[in-house]
Amino acid sequence: MDITSPQFWVAVIQIIAIDIILGGDNAIIIALACRQLPEGQRNRGIFWGVFGAIALRVIFISFALTLLTIPFLKIIGSILLIWIGIKLLQPSPENRAHKIDASATLLGAIKTIIIADAVMSLDNVIAIAGAAKDSVGLVIFGLIISVPIIVWGSKVIMKLMDQFPIIVTIGAGLLGWIAGNMIITDVIINEWINTNATYLQWLSPILGAFVIVLTGKWLAAKSLKIERL
Image (cartoon, rainbow, N blue to C red; front, side):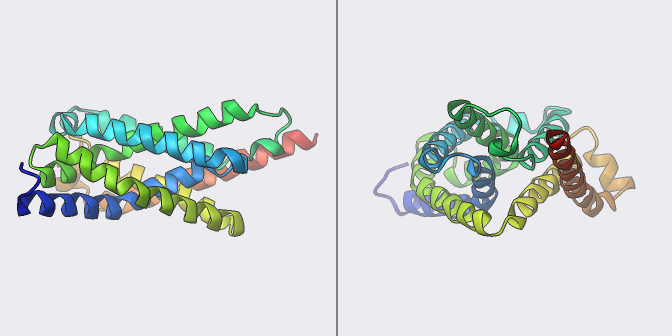
């Protein structure tokens, strides 16, 4: 697609709009993963986490339709997302009995961002690929432009989390909601649910949110109780 054509810029605007709309989840993931880092390492965690997530998204777009047809992939992804959400609700390193090395914490934050974004991007990349009309170059261009928006959003959310800790729980619950919605759209069970159990379309996301919040809070309380002994 010619960069001077109106169609090119319309497609770019569409991709940026999609990234802004869908980027809210990514910003929350980044903020949750980096909130426990020392102040000086937060920007590095955000940068490398976003870099890895965007790179994976570009790769996914090249064969997104095939990915979504693989049986059990979304179910596995949902379980992984629930595990990440529970992990993000655990006490910060300074509250644990054994001090965690800062560099390991930074690497852990980056890995969490990349893994979570990879799981959550399976649906999102379809919309981006459609707007780009099979142009990988256009996808990359649109994503690069959208990166500052996602980074800025994650920084704002992180500051809010520092002031209002309840946002951490809400963010983790959102991951559970996404996981619950994802699991029922797996190709192996989606048709059966649409025919026989439509109530799961609203119940499953709610259960996913409750599983993460209740399990995460219970494990966090148990961990702090053990440390005090």
